[in-house]
Length: 103
Image 1 (tube, helix red, strand yellow):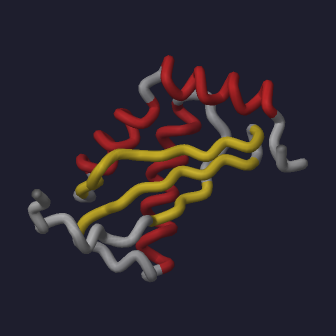
Image 2: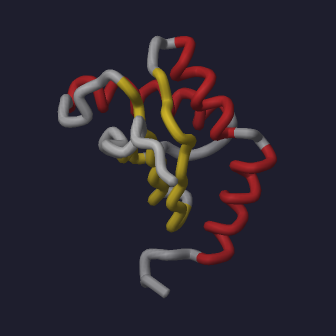
């Protein structure tokens, strides 16, 4: 286990994420603000002060720092409204296989 991980604290935060439907609230709020989240949300929780949220958002330049900061601000407003500390946003590159059919 990484020294940065607080297992008990992390487990409690994950339970609260599920209890409060935080992922759904984040996606819904981003949609209202014109962002299209693709393929869900992932969380990496190490402690209250070390939380990462990963998303794939269509039709944005994931290297645009201003855009990333704007999205992160929206996410953290939702997080704070639900009694969570701030999250660091990780934007996932678009899925290059999205339109390919398999099998």
